[in-house]
Amino acid sequence: MKHVDPSEFAPLDQISDLSAEEYFRLLHPEGSRGRAAVLCKQGGDEVENFSHEHAGMIMQMPLFLDQTSFLTLNRFRKGRQGRHLAALNSLYVDLDYFDASQWRGKSPDEVQAAYSAYLLVSGMPQPSIFIQTGRGLAAIWLIEETPVSALPRWQGAMRALIEFSTSFGADMACRDATRVFRIPGTINEKSGKEVRISGGTGRRYGFDALADQIFRASGRPTREELEERKKQKKGKKRPSGIPVPMGLPQAKRFRLILDDLEIFRNAHGGVIPSGLRNTWLHFHATCLTHIPGIGDIEGEVKKMAARATPGLKPGEVNAIAKQAEKKARLTRTASVWGDGRYHYKGATIADGLGVTPVMARRLGLQQVIPVSERRRRKAEAERQRRSENGAVSREEYLAKNNASREKPWKKLGIGRTKFYELKRAGMLPVLEAA
Image (tube, rainbow, N blue to C red; front, side, top):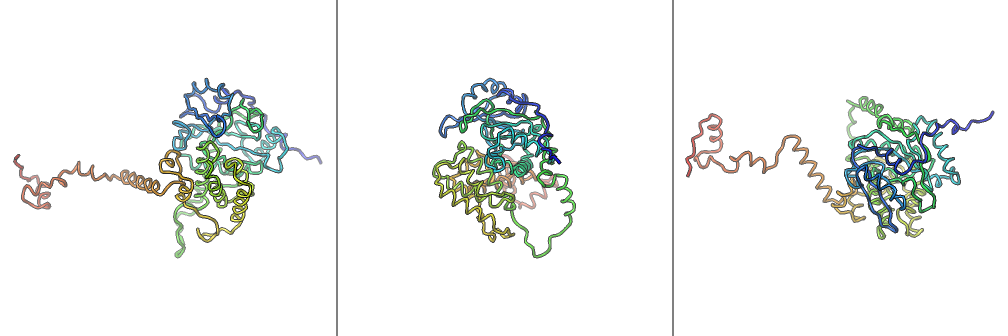
């Protein structure tokens, strides 16, 4: 009996070979909230960022084709910083299939057809856009404009999508909201090949429905299923004697740290400055040891080293990669200090990388922040909480309650209690002007 290749049933693409201008219009429609940004490499480590209104960006597109240029997939109020994120616009994966033994040596068209079939049999919608990047393959699912408040769930969907695509060489680091992809029509300087749009549906999907499809395909619970679990757990008490864990779970905390490390890398043009490369790679590898589901940690570390820390000696990279692989195999326990992994504080990582409070605020870092910045944020959050509960500052209170400052009862020669008794009764004597 002849076996049928699932790729034969993959849906036909609705778009292909879009120009840079057409790609921009599809990705960022006119009238959308926020602005897209373009990153251009000028040679070496020099990077220039551009952010214009919609019409201005369309006009500039032909000029970007003569350089190594990248376009943001989400939109920002200004620039390309996480703290300026204005709207979520897409979900995406960067498939470095040449790193996956199953697909090494295959053509981009073959891998694209196979990935489309994989999505089909998994109940996943086809990408809005496929990009053949000159070396690998990128897939983008456009979503209806989604507010920044959905960022935590968007990050969860990104992690699930990457894990789902691991067998195709999905880049584990390609999951931050500031991510950029190459602009079609530019030349990939690493391969000398032109970047092109090679397919896609051209559709936009509702974020909630798409996220649930991704969660199902990756074996994770949907939002509805999580809500049902919460209802079932409601009212159940924790057995006495079992301590309640403080703060975020370690896997979640190190995912956030990994996101911060990627933001730090992007802020330096994708390459960590000399002098910080060994430290940064060690922290990156440490994060991977805390995240379940990563099959080849040693390979992931080496792949990231080639991108982010060029110039590190092979011996240094191998040592970091092998140590991470060894740590990841250790048994996970409920004890933070008892499972043998490194459990760095965010402040320790910030100190190791020279992250200042100003830098942490400018980049919108969540975990890799100095102690002083963490205290400032905690104090600000407390002030905000108190303000929302009706509390006012001492200055505001005194401005509204002059009596506490001026002590008029002394001028009347009576005590404070008597003063307020007479005031409530409307019997306060009138003080004569001096």
